[in-house]
Length: 123
View 1 (tube, helix red, strand yellow):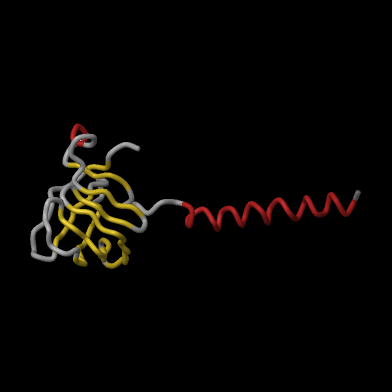
View 2 (tube, helix red, strand yellow):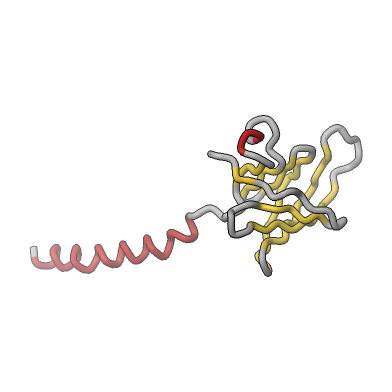
């Protein structure tokens, strides 16, 4: 019985410590989600949808994406992206995203253009 109590006494803090260490790995990255220009646009017109391993926009979709943290945001390397309604071959694309202090995301395209500041959609 004494051995059992010792194993519980030492096992509980160890399990709690392991859970605390694993928690950040389980949390979604801050950019994951659907983003739109206004909350009322979330269902009908999300501008961009970002996942841990993918990126899609209102007019494009990609087979995969990776995110590299740097400076005040992330560089997104998206692979095999195709624009809706175009017959061009899919191409890779790179762009940057940043989230401001108010939680709004902005996209910075390679051609120098940038999106409006976007709000996260619920869900």
